Length: 227
Image (tube, rainbow, N blue to C red; front, side):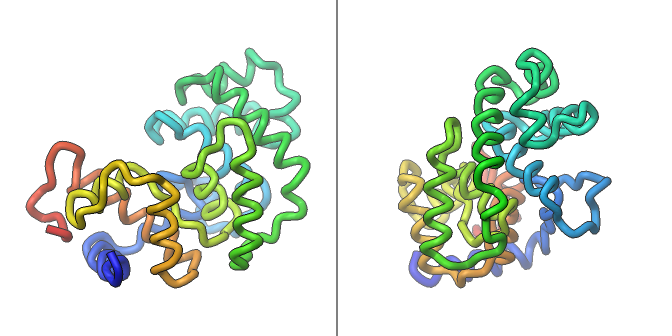
C-alpha cells in the first residue's frame, strides 16, 4: 500500500467531493439545529453517544434515538448517568441492542464526567492521542472503531477510523487481507498519511460513500473510481 493511500483519497475526492460530516453525525446526515454552528461540548458528547448507538445498526435508527434523547433532555453525561434505566432504554430502543447500549452509555457518561474537562481538543501530539485512545478503550463497550470515531469526530484528533467499508475496498482493489486486524490497518493509515484531522475525516467519509453507493458488499459497480 506504500504510496497508494493518497492516490486513493484523490480518486475518491474527485468522484464524490467533500462530505462535510462534522459537526453533523458519524454517517453524514446533518442534524438541522447544528448546521453551521461551531462545535460545543454538548455537540461533542452527542457525537460520542452516536458512535456507540451506531454499533450494529443503521444511522437512520440512530438519528431517531438521538432525537429522543434530545427531546427528553437526556443528552448530557450527567442526565444519562442519572436516568431511569427503563426510560433511557425506551429512548434508544430504535438503535437496537438497547440493553447493551444502555450499559455502554452509562460507562461513557461516567468516563466523560471524569475526563472531558481535561481533554486537549484538537491535539495532534501522538503520545497524548495514544493515551486518550487507551483510556477510551478501557470503557465498557468501546472498541477501536468507536474509540477512533470519538477521537476524530468528537475531539478533533487525527486518529483514522477503520470500518467495514475500508476493509472491503482495500481487500477488493489492493489485495489487503480481508481479515486484517484493526490495529494493523489503522497503523498503516497513521504512518502513511499526513497527520491532518480534516484529511482523516474526509477520507473516512469518502470510504463510506464508496462502500454504500458503488463498491458494495456483493458487487463493485462499473463507475467505481478504483476499478
